[in-house]
Image (cartoon, rainbow, N blue to C red; front, side, top):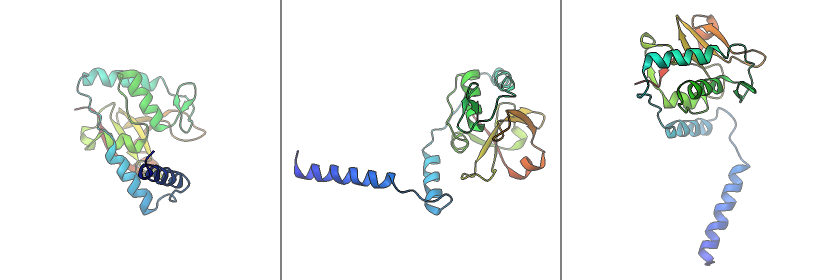
Length: 179
C-alpha cells in the first residue's frame, strides 16, 4: 500500500472512531443543525397511484384494528407494541404497501404540510410534546376532529380528539402523502 493511502486510511479511521465517542448534548445548536440536515435528506413520499377514498378506508380499518395494542418505545409490530411513528409506519405498509420513514420528524419532512381545512382521514397530525425534535409525536387523522395514536408508556393505541386541551396546545399541523 502506498504511504499516502495508508495515511489517509489511518486518518479516516481515527476520525470515525473519535466521532463515535462524542455527541452533542440534546437541544444544542449542533444537534439542531444535524437534525435539520437529516430532515433535508429525507426523500418525499408521494402517493398518487392509489385511489384516495379506498386508501382512507384501508388506513381506517388497519388503524382501528390496533386499538388496545400496548405502547412500546421503538415498537413497530402488534407483537412488540407500537410507539407513535411505528404505528403509522405499520399502518401505511400493511394497508397500502407504502414504506414511510421511521420517525415523526422524518415523516413530517417526507410529507406535504396542508391547511387543517384540507385534513382528511389518513393524513397525519403532528405535535410537539417536548421531545428532542419539534415533531416529537404523530397520529393518524380518522375524521370528525379525531386521530388515532400510540400515546406514551403505560398506555395503549387509542383515539383522541384534536380539541383535547393537551393536544390542541401542542398541535403543529397536518401533513399528507396524497397528491
